[in-house]
Length: 287
Image 1 (cartoon, rainbow, N blue to C red):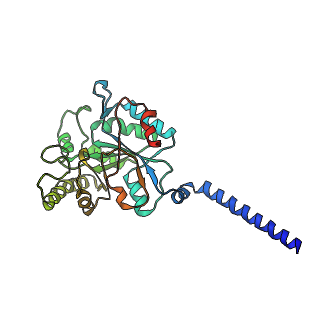
Image 2: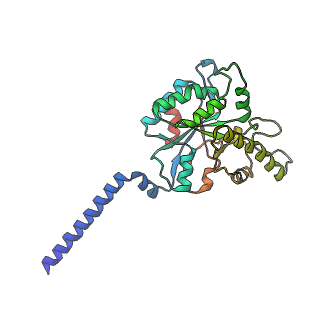
Image 3: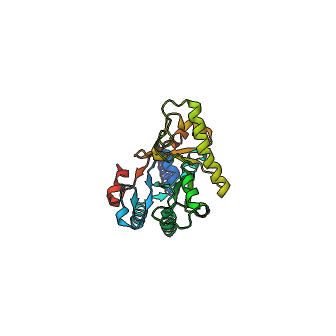
């Protein structure tokens, strides 16, 4: 009887050890899956860039240098971040596809020619990705220019098509002609405007841009980037009905994704200004 009890205890110890070893091995092999179950959500910082120029006189809140952007990339890779695009987080929410342990999205608003000239080569060099949100009116104007300047021009349809065909750039919709502040601020609702009038305005302008991008490139964006961040309480639903699966705001903060589709709307972004060190700027992600 004593021998039997000893054997039972030994058996239980062996079984416990086997379970622990299997668990440790499973964690090492499947750390992305384990993170999904042990964490309530995925932490997702998004960076908002605009213009990139070599002329230091133009650097400021919305203009940085190519070297500064490359230093950002080097810093992020050193800290273990992996760049993803909107399709990746949409696939995470809708199709349960895993994300890397430290995902980050780099976004560029407005579609400046400088993005094509300076940013794409840096992304290729470091095997990283970024999202560029383009404005229809700006593209049409640049497509008709005979003399282009990286300081003030925007990408034309040839640049955009080339970017889409690369593995480094994802193009998104930034409106056709709503990137302005007048009676209507960006894509927000005008004073005294009815819901139907507002809906028609968004569908006409943003829908026109969707059709234009698809006709010119064969690609259809899945995300709308609010011009200047201006929106309204009805805009996300209107955009959802138009087929958009996500929207980008200009509000600052970290995003947390737990698999809820609503979390893909009004995603927050940190504006990257010139003159702030990588350590100081990216430290806010760790708070």
